Image (cartoon, helix red, strand yellow):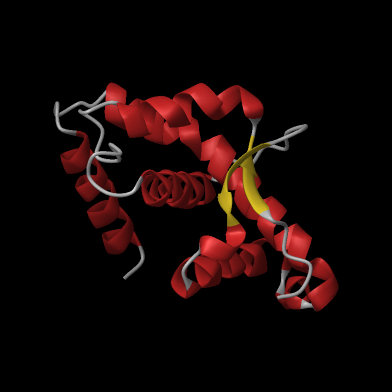
Length: 144
């Protein structure tokens, strides 16, 4: 894709939430598990997919760069492209729409931070990882 923005951005108001998700030892995304950037990316990929599943996508002004888009793995890029196609159709893959693909992903990821934050810090089971596994199992059963 040409015209890819340098950084993956989120709503600046959500910056503290993301920071807490990678800094808290009770979080499955705690930076002590892996490199900090990888965990931020994981938080945002989870946020994006949960928000997409829930149909929650909000635009935001400005932006806080979280990681470089060039650091994304191929499968992560394919995921954001798949979400953009589901939203906009195949024309979104045209080279002039590269920025739009990333903006859609950023809006879902930023919107979904509330979902992930609540799953981690308001966990019904007391174990956020169990909640994530239950949610994944639920989605898989719904989409058989």
